[in-house]
Length: 149
Image (cartoon, rainbow, N blue to C red; front, side):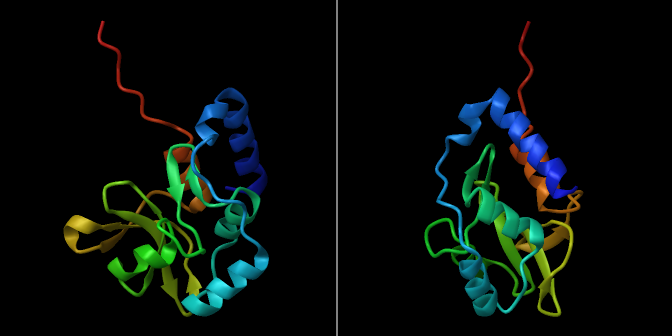
């Protein structure tokens, strides 16, 4: 998914459901903060993560949570000790599992992967091709239970 496509989907959702975007979110990060994090983590972040963090900030994003490069309760570094070294968590599902990137040769590989806490954070591939797809499918399309008639 391109950045422009993602932006259009987010803005459409924000126009229709502004309250989805009122959650706890930090101010956008700076490019310098991203560079410092990459140096500390020893890997390059994907462009879509950098875009989200700079454009919107991290934290609650509609119906998902984007972990931050900043230290704190909802930080990547807070989640990292639970996950394998080759996995960089960037979102959680609220029940102890993480979505993120595989790290290969000092860079985050394309695609979104899942680390399941019930399987000792075993990492498996998901259907999401990138972080934008994950945010659109999980964050912008809430599951609405059927109404009993």
